[in-house]
Length: 113
Image 1 (tube, rainbow, N blue to C red):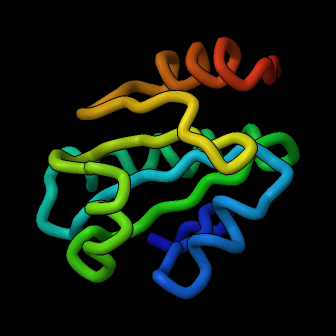
Image 2 (cartoon, rainbow, N blue to C red):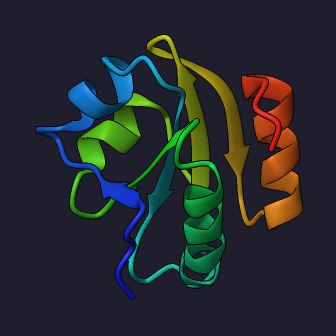
């Protein structure tokens, strides 16, 4: 499946996309071998489509880019980090459904759609 609305992060683009962005950014830390991560992918794509004008959705493979996961103390996946103004404003560890993500976006990012 191609994620048309989701940015794939790397060591090279993380700072530019996540930390130097004026929009809030939701980062999904995942791995190919992670079953819950695979189940979460279509939910993340729906969120990315719905909030594309308000929020950047990105994902980073912890096996390919372990340093970034380590920098943010990601020890379990899936882990979602919400960034705003270069800071993590909310962390969620484990599987989450679409309704819960929408609640978090509304509460922490003040985005209502």
